[in-house]
Image (cartoon, rainbow over all chains, first blue to last red):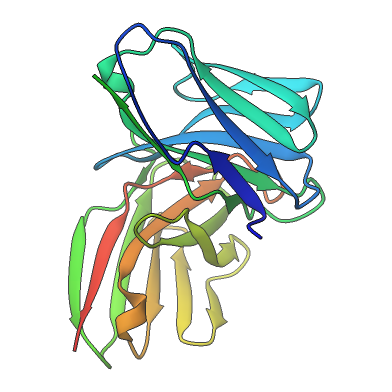
Length: 113
Length: 113
């Protein structure tokens, strides 16, 4: 079984709809992250959480919100989706006591029409 | 501003030869650097890292070189194999353990038989 799972894997939605992307991990890591990948721009950090009570904005948090429901779960919401949020979204985890290595989920491809 | 740059969007190398992927950074506070590898429909996976106290780190066929004065790092793969065909991202962090990563845009490596 995968250590970091993301649901859904693919989603097509319409402008103005609310969307939630979910991430679960079985690695026991405290730290979780949400990134988006756009062609030619690499991965950009949206939000990160170093424990259940800690939520921080990343480089591109506008238009997004997150919820850390438990150590193992970190969800990303688009309150009112817009077409330029069409991208590949990745969740990642890391160990607070370890190096900077992050472990990524398989990604969610989101299309906003 | 793009703090971590991979100026070559793509690279094509013959099987058995050396692949050299380059990465430049602008922030002198970056202290720890990583390379990730990404296959289609999968999340990035950690490949190799280097701390700024070193100028070289080697792991099997993969070697990362760091030139702090030039703010440049490179990943050497030798010999290149067809399974190395993927997108490679370099990433940088302010402090080892700080765990917020800044990613480059990625370089698509194709190994030709």
